[in-house]
Image (cartoon, rainbow, N blue to C red; front, side, top):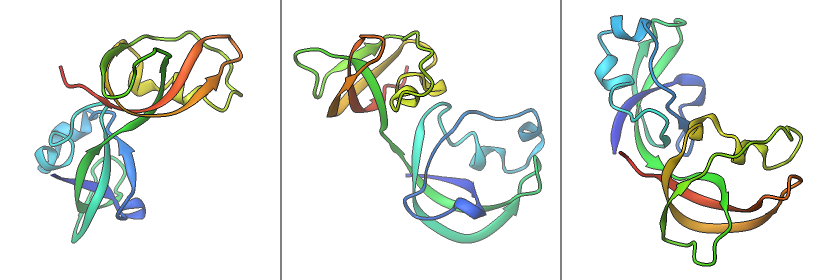
Length: 145
């Protein structure tokens, strides 16, 4: 469990987000350590508890709520393999411009913009790729370096 700040309008139990890093303005904030430094960049989190304490964000004057969060898995595509569940693999980058494909976000996530090590938690379904990649949709956790 990690304590951090979440925008008030989305601070609900079960809300999921991906921490994309901090801005230059964040470095001027007295809440830097609890807000963004408490989170791993490019990792996904789920809100597990919403507290009452509010703060104002220096970036956009948005009301932020203190919340407990936990790392959560992502839904991504990987190349299909015979034995996939519960293994750790290096997720290959794909080249795709099929932006209307229903799996585009799973294949081209900016959070996975470079080759990343991931642990496969669960296999969701085979992907019928318009570019003929042999892919499967999986629930995965990014492995920290």
